[in-house]
Image (cartoon, rainbow, N blue to C red; front, side, top):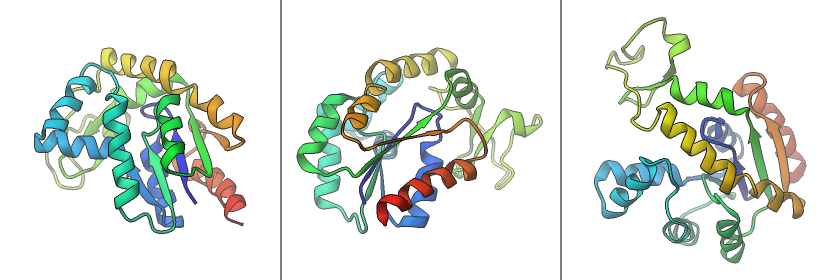
Length: 210
């Protein structure tokens, strides 16, 4: 079972990917995680990616496609894979079709105003914990490890707005691309808890697995 996860920044793709991986054993392939690891490590590709991400733009197609192709070709995928953050436009989707088969595209749909609130209100900890200002009650340290919380540099209104506009212009057309192939399933990611959203996704995945 090979799936593509679609959804704007802040839609909850990472959370749903974790649920899907736990239940179905699919390899979670997140281009965002790969780029962030390279950025943290100061690698050449990481520095290049950071220059685009900081400006609210997308990493060039050629770089991203090669990275994903190498991962799918040389890495373990077990029962199948789940792509998170790729493809981001129809060019990437067409390239993906050349070296891999996609069974289903799950589109997590969330209103833009809610996305802005989710991302700009996000606070991070170096231990990996994530919070939202609405639940912190003024706290500035992590409830798990006590370390100071911080806001990612690109989690500001101007950059977030640019990222969402870029998504709408380049990535949203993928909804039509996969709908035309009869592979699209859209779920409301702004209504209910993450667990409720996953229940709807799992119901759809079970149909395809059977």
